[in-house]
Length: 248
Ligand SMILES: [Zn+2]
Image (cartoon, rainbow, N blue to C red; front, side, top):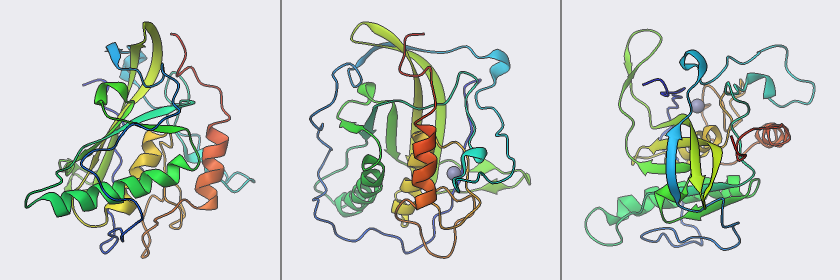
């Protein structure tokens, strides 16, 4: 499909399961107060935006490292502009609260929720109960294997796929990035979730340093929090103009 986007793979290191936190995993996230109504209203319609020659993401203009020490030069923007919103609505797949699978499902939910909290400290993010109200949907599912550049099938623990949509919410149309994130139910899900969420929030590229959540190649130690370079890159990205969130 022409909107099939950049698929980014990250193999999460083993042993990165989230420890217990103060937040009890629930069967489903409840919507958080304080959101503007229109940003997270249920979409009454949505359609893919036709793009020239099917191009979605432009190749980054990778030059010398930026003096500020972030990795802005490694980010791709879409043919329409930087894929960021002033406010994000995120749907997290509900999990069972009872039954034989509940323990594993709740571990996944807790690890994903933990990763999301790191991004919530930086960006206005609201959890929503209806996937039609969200621009980012997190699914508890192992990504299908994909062929790598070497022609071999590769497995991954997480994958984020971007589309660009014209969405009508509360009666007014607006351009939105729309991201499906598949996160494997297995171990190491917190580091994977932190990384894939970075793509979803607009960091379509990879850092060259293993200590960053958006590292192209993960280091020996799982990255469970955003590095100063991750945060600086986000701050730069969210200072850029964008057509997303506006009327087409
Ligand atoms: Zn990635």
